[in-house]
Length: 414
Ligand SMILES: NC(=O)c1ccc[n+]([C@@H]2O[C@H](COP(=O)([O-])OP(=O)(O)OC[C@H]3O[C@@H](n4cnc5c(N)ncnc54)[C@H](O)[C@@H]3O)[C@@H](O)[C@H]2O)c1
Image 1: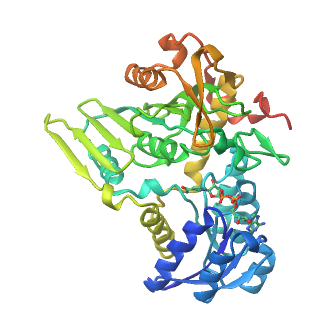
Image 2 (image 1 turned 30 degrees about the vertical axis):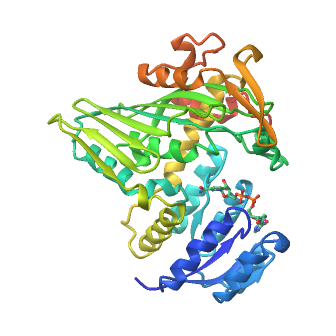
């Protein structure tokens, strides 16, 4: 494969992880980093110096960088979410491929527009859901495709973490529905568990998120922290391929919580994928098997694979992307539909919550949430269906309403 010429937009924050991945790929002779851009040099000077050391020119303005380097093969975008769409579209229109950070966008119609430009220009637009490149996860997809568990029927993702108030105080858009005039819908679905979500969707699409076309969504969104958006969600999405996808997420768990996992149930067996890339499965022959790739499940290694995947796709249009903008259309159909279904972000009553000091901040714990979520996930029920006392049922949102965002209650701009 010929060495590709690239530039990085957004060098601070999570851009630092891109700098480490780019450095490794440059060192291995796979990549040339010719430019980078970030208007806030003081917050990313060390990273800029690393890229300068690799031969990259530093810019403070994206358009100026693209003007100066019209022959880039691709740009990587590690910028704030609201910039992904304009930056990706501009790069594709200038003939460049794009690797954008997740989520590609917040609103369904923005992902649709980005996908249309990708289609029109013939430029690939990959989304940085790096956990899709894990080896055990891909083994799970292979087992599904090969019919090892029979006909896939249900995919359940469960993610529980703990975040103190400090997490929401770190930046202005944290926990907000809208910030600076743009939607952020910052919550478990779009941010901390977006990787778990996208992998669950990929499995529900029988190995490719493109196959997971949602026909209905029912969801319940809650907050226990004092935030606008959700810090806990449960949802059910039915797919056109007959697969039921269930997702349970919270940032209000205690220390005694399981690692996030995805359970894939078929007519003849079950696969369990654990977040550290360990896989257990029981196939049609009843034999239990395990593969453990946890040692390789390092963010930089996973991200390197997404870079290589996009670079291979530039040379071979038939190359499948781990996560493409088209998959993000299905992802956003479900997340946007989840807000519509829930009707509001409901407040968990104080009587169900413990708040206590932790690490110089305050922790919020929903009592027994670990057991409650696991029981709901086991039963395939949403909180209200399971009989959780504070739960509020969401409506079932069908395909037409999912697509017609103008009817969505949370769209205050319509
Ligand atoms: N894949 C992952 O696991 C993962 C983890 C964390 C964050 N992210 C994603 O990475 C992205 C960036 O998140 P963050 O927390 O680092 O954000 P951030 O607000 O820290 O911004 C990142 C960088 O972009 C720069 N920037 C702002 N405006 C710019 C512009 N016009 N041109 C160029 N650079 C500009 C900022 O100065 C900053 O250095 C988000 O999409 C986020 O969801 C992904």
